[in-house]
Length: 365
Image (tube, rainbow, N blue to C red; front, top):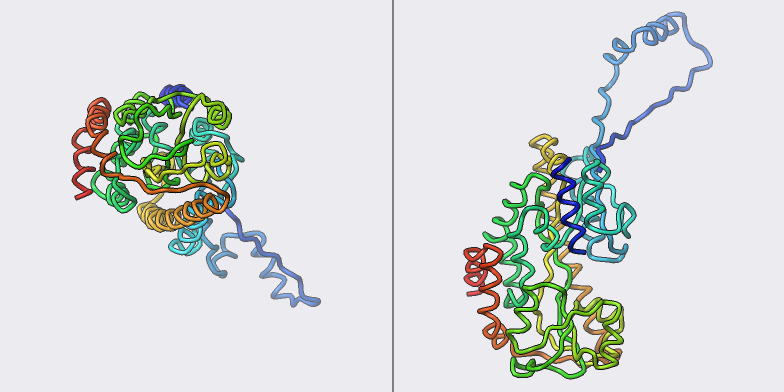
C-alpha cells in the first residue's frame, strides 16, 4: 500500500475487476409426469451433484477485464480497446472479455485510474511516458524527448524493437504494471503567426511549450525562446503577441481552432506521441499461462489497429485544418534534428538512457 500511495503522490506532481457471467437455465414442467420421472426429479433435487453427472458440464465462467480511458467514444483509444475486446474474445473462445469505460467514466486522469487499479476496479489503462517515469521507471521518459524520431516508420521500429522492449521490461520489473505494447497519440506540430522552414527560422520565436526541462532545452537548442503558458491561455496568447507560436497534435489544433490565431502550421513532426498500454501486474500474474498468452496476442492486434485509426484521424485533421484556412508547409527536418542533437544527448544522459538513446539513432539508419 505504501508503494501504491507513493506512485499516486508522484503522479499528481505531473498533471478491472475480475468477474464472472453465469449461464442459468430454467425448466418447464410437462403436464403429466410419470412416477419414475417424479422419483428421478426428487432424487436430483436432493442430490444436485449426482444430477449434474447426467448433464453437460457447465460453461467455464468468463474472465472480465475492465479497461478505462479518458478519451471520447470516437477516439483512437476507444478503437484500440474495441480491437482488444474483439480479439481477446476470439482467441479465448469467449472465456475472456474486456469491459470498456471511455470518457473518464472511472477516473478523469492517470493518477485516479491507477488508484482504481490498486483497488481492482480497473485492470487496463493507457498512459504517457512522463507519468510512467513518476512510478519508478524514469527510463520511460526517453519517449518524451522532442525530435527523437526521423518519421513514423522510425518510431515504429523503435517502440516495437529492442528499445521498446527494454522500456517494457523496466516497467514490468517495477511490479505495478505489465506492459502490453505501445499506442500512438497523434503527431505534434508547430503552429504560429509565421511559418518555419529551417532551423534558422526558429531564432527568437517565443514558443509555448510544456513545463519540462528536457522540452525547454531542446527547443532552446533550435534558437527559439521556450515559454511556459497555461493551456487555456494559448489562443489568447497568440492573439495578444504574448507568444509567437506553440505546438500540439493536429487533432487539438483543429478542435481548439488554434489555426485561427496561429494560421501557419509547419509539419515539424517533433513528437510522435507515445502511449503505453498497461495491465495491472497483479491481475496479469493471476491469470493462467494460457490466458496470459491470449491477452498478449489480443494486445498485439489492438496496437496495430489503434495506430491505423490514429493515423487516419491525424490525416483527416490535417485536411480539415487546410480546408478551414490553415496554411500548412513542410520543413527541413534534418536541419532541426542536427541542431538539437546535443540537447537530446544531454537529456538522455540525465534520464540515464544513453545506451537506449544511441539505439534509437541507430534504428534510423
